[in-house]
Image 1 (cartoon, rainbow, N blue to C red):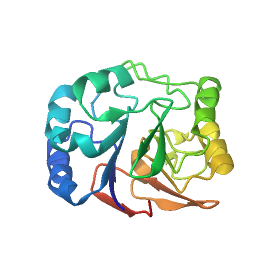
Image 2: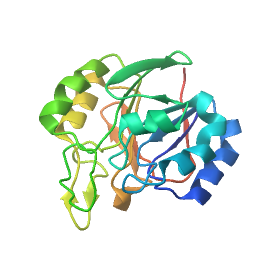
Image 3: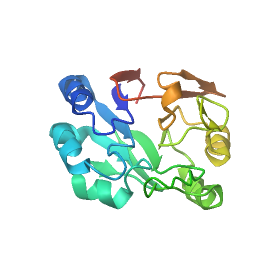
Length: 198
């Protein structure tokens, strides 16, 4: 199975058009949040991505809420939920974990203590989609240090999904590696191809 995955387009219409051009080659499309920019521009951005919404599974970032994202797209939006596509169980959780406490705009944040029971529902997942990174992997921003989630890391280590994808930390876009048996990737707004067996 060929997966097209991305994150953090932040209203970059040229990036969205490149994703749309590649989408017909994908069996599954994953968007790991931050489609908007500071809670603005979501409708226009999602309109460019809408032609492949039937193949897409998204989570919200901290620049939009799950409710705002669901209102702007016909794609499936997960937030603390599991779905099944092409024989694979996919669990998604959006938002900034841990919270960012940004004052410039109303960031959609989730404290670690609230994320923990939500992530418990990821048991049995083949793919884990979060906006935020796991603690200790592709999670360091030059101006803020480590921004990763302990609870997401714990979930990867206990569930060991085949794949975990995220975004959020722009300084680490494109980094890939493994946590145990799990392939992990900080995506960014470019076309990222991932091959998986269904």
